[in-house]
Length: 283
Figure 1 (cartoon, rainbow, N blue to C red):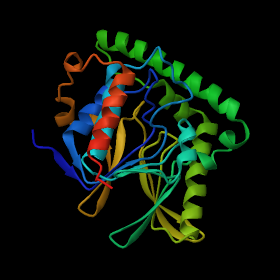
Figure 2: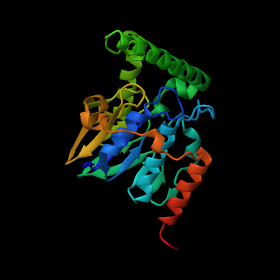
Figure 3: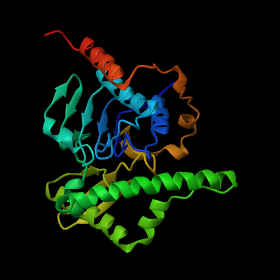
């Protein structure tokens, strides 16, 4: 199958290691594209809720696929989020084409683009981290219940529903938070003369023009791989939101877990690190 070429792909809020993560669908998407650069904009592995008891083969397959980009010398930028914040201490770390950074500033086709996860503008995260972690557990539980309900609903011939989306759309506080988050981000970006600002964190895919006291700026959010199954793509001078639910080509890709190695997670990681070291230029 010929892969679709993409100049830049931005992924965020994958939350590997949680029950809500759609790793199989993400794998299908990754196998359908040929990116020239990859930006991982936070919450890729959910360290907050990580458990040795739950790490499916597909989650490791996603990690291996992403490391495969580095082995092929495709630029990969990792911007840690709040759920994988432990990686922020490695800011400036380089391994081949991988770079870990807390924020990223790029110039693309003479336009200034500012990328960061976005949790620094979350009041709850800054002042009540314990409450944010409790909320994350509740959110993951809601997703598990939602999956069971959707399984029954599909068996009955009805469509899927999203509990969390309904909550966000009906609770005024959640809507107000999203709007406030976007306004704050855009105001700071415009003040610093950026043309585009790219975030994750709030699980709300979006591309829109925002007018601020400091001028206009294009706000973009890559969404997530818990509910929306979205990414941002830049191809032929244009940004767009990728939606897995609309991609029949990716959905048709077979992910055969039985063909995967029966190595332990530790053995797989060691083999991947060996592969990376073999692809590094000699000193």
